[in-house]
Length: 309
Image (cartoon, rainbow, N blue to C red; front, side):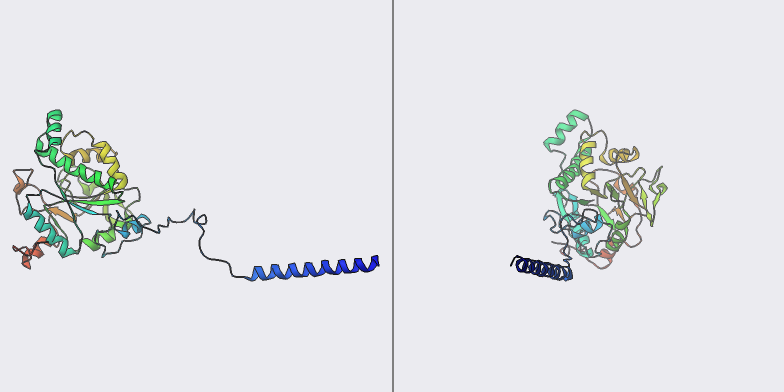
């Protein structure tokens, strides 16, 4: 009887082992899941599922991984395009609106600081700098503050007296993939005809028109990264000279990682009086290959009533 019990026990163990072997074979034959686990991507590219509403440009996320932005992107691959404009200069706002419509871009107008602003008055009393210089300084500082407050990844800053290349969108799209991820400023235009010139800068591999900035004057057209905006707020906390010169000197001293486009893609227009310089007609202005303003004039799109928003 004991012998029969042992045989039955041995038989059950054999059946159990066969069952477990079959179960294991079935499990191993099942297809493995290909869905990524949150911990499986630690060494890969950053995956962004939901873009921040404050940064409306998906191309900025693409740029972070050096993928060319969509040429049709309405902010040229940046988080926002700011246009600094004095409220009373409706003539300039109309021209900038016409440029935006012609290029199918979205411009965010930001009110320029006026010379009678209390902050300007306080800075004038403390520094002795001209109020018009300080008003310009505060206008650009307000953009950096807004970039930080809105948590934008980057922004393009334009003044309201510029002209641009007609194919600006495709030019910028071709440029951004070669911009180092550590960039802090990018000049699409500058006005330094002296030495050192921006053309003296070292070209970046793969894109000869992109140079390491040397001493870029003027602030009519430049981009700033999130890191760059924070750094500028610190470096320019106390104005010591015109804002464009103060920025250029910090670039020269290696405190800002900046790059310049040579030849320029934007320039300052001499079609309307400057709010800063009395000698605006004699100031240097680079020539463009295919001016948007020239096209708008030729096509009659700058006539009264055709540039209204």
